[in-house]
Length: 507
Image (tube, rainbow, N blue to C red):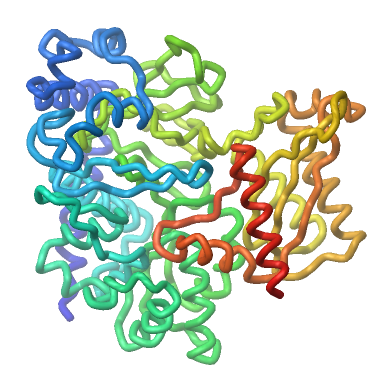
């Protein structure tokens, strides 16, 4: 097949020059004003006097922060499925289905043609930054393996289709790009994940794969199966780039190392969301993701301490601070304005703005006032695993409230590792998690002193494959589905514990 890397390198040279001279404040101000101008005649634009907004301060004064439920109630539910003119001009031909992992609530998020174009530009930025770090790479010398969910979409009527965002991306793919993509449409349509994976492993070995994208957990399963078929040889010897996102890479880095060592492939983290493509790693692994400032999204950031306030402090590129944990608020060309997407980040650089993904607002564990965030939990689990010589595949955690008045509750972790620890190693693992969290989080430490506010955390180590079986039992195998690290809703966590008990009874 033809290699278009030379053309990509020409574009990369231009794009990198633009980014080198980009003024973050000017770029974001321009994005906001363009969005307001395009949406001024929508119902949302008229309700909030978009025609009279001239500055970021004007926007923050006139447009309050909203969550999905607010948009659904006030602007989308009555018009569903055709949201034409509600919050963005014209029809949103697709609705990305996003299932809340802690609540189970299904969300329908509009995907407009403008958003699809922006996502494609962002995808090219991934290759641009790869070439900047690896100039001799040839990422377009083979096909791109897109390991996503089923591309089968549901017809909601009135010309609107809904489904997994990866399926929408395939549906909106240019015809000429399909020749450079894998899997073929008939295989991508399969929603039986196990059958799909079986066919993918065999068929992909017949292709020259130079890039692969997906969530780490599912890519790892694919690589393990491919190794089984090749007898341990590199399944994709021409692999140049592994693009991952959706969950923390720390749990997977070492487990990918043996596969990547057989190729010259580089890993590159991305931050795509159902609401838009937010950031991409422009440097090395762990050095932060560069916010995409000129691609149809205006960003705001609320300090976690302000979440829930009636009028929370709203930072933006013009006044953000490094080292502070923020909840992301965005306004985009999908017709969302001052929309709280539920992710939390921490900036490590100002110019250009680079961030670390620290978790989700729904993944904050604070049943007792301990205020733990996802990145702290990941760090504690990884440190404990290193301490006792284990590799953790997956975990989730929730709180168990006191059973009697005057008692104190505790956290319960469900952990799946590559080996079952004995009692001594399990105790060291638990103690390391507890000690690490106390060192990182003063609120957690205050509750743990003398067990005054919380008892020590408890751990259940599960047999290998348990989380995969649990996800399958809930219809969430493959694609963008990922194990929730935190289940903060008490009823949901109780239900999950019952589901795991049922799985154990089947063994």
